[in-house]
Amino acid sequence: MRQIWIIAKSSILENSRKQVFHVLCLLVLTVIVGSTLLSIFTEGVKIKILKDLCMTTILFGGIVLSIALGSTGIPNDIENRTIYPLIARPITRAQYVIGKFLGTFITVAMGLAAMGLVFGFLIYSYQRTFDMFLPVALLFTLLETAIIAALATVISTMATPAVTAMLTFMFYLFGTVKIGYFAGLIGRDNNPVTSTAARLVYHLLPNLECFNLKAALVHQDTVPASYMVQVAFYGVCYIAFMLFLGSNYFARKEV
Amino acid sequence: MLQAQAVCDRILVCLFLTFVGAGSARAHEHGELLSHHWEIPTYIREIHFQMGLMAAAALAIAVIKLVRSLKGSNTRR
Image (cartoon, rainbow over all chains, first blue to last red; front, side):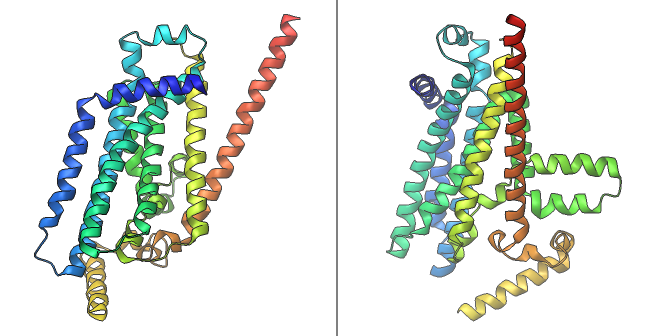
């Protein structure tokens, strides 16, 4: 555990110095603060649009951060040869991959926390009450970004940063529309070969739409607690499984 | 106010179905897409299926590793 934390700490320091982190955080914060300019709407509609816009921006910012930081961590270490002194120490490859993922995840979480704080303050200034569902919705957004960070870290063990970024973004895109759109497309496919291949990809994709509780926050709907627990457990399992696969692959890889 | 908003929401849905096409909504045959994902059983069923799949795959990999390590120890002997 100590070894994982050492890798994670160095990864956090490395990631927090990257320009993309600062620029993206500033950009999202600007959009959140700028969304107060929506003064043409009446108060009720304005708060709804504000919540919708801010949650979408926070999610998108988190996803881009996860992809940008997750896809460059391990390839940069290999390219700069900083990985050699690390793997020469008593650190297993699995600990290295998990540490790298944790570093990315904590950096993204710091960014999301800053965005969430500003967003929460903004909502409080309008409603004069604290929205108790807001932290829950933000936590699920964080879990979604953690899945993307895990995917980016795992893919980066076998591909270049550009390919990793593209593939992870595809995973995100198809994972979001998986059941809403992809399932319908598979249902219409009559060719058994392509249909089977599509089904395989379909079941490998993460079910990301489940983590989106934006609608519940905007319309103040109630989401069943059992559903949220199952989705959270699924998210943790998916991350653990991806890291398990990635570490197994990286353990055999020659660097 | 709420009633007016409900009417507006329905008009928006009707406009969407008329102009954008109802293909994606019909994907679930009963227009399930018009409700939230926590109300649609397909989402939770897929989660359960994937969790089973992940458990089976992890178990298979663990068994393969165990068999390999046992084979390796036999060869060394």
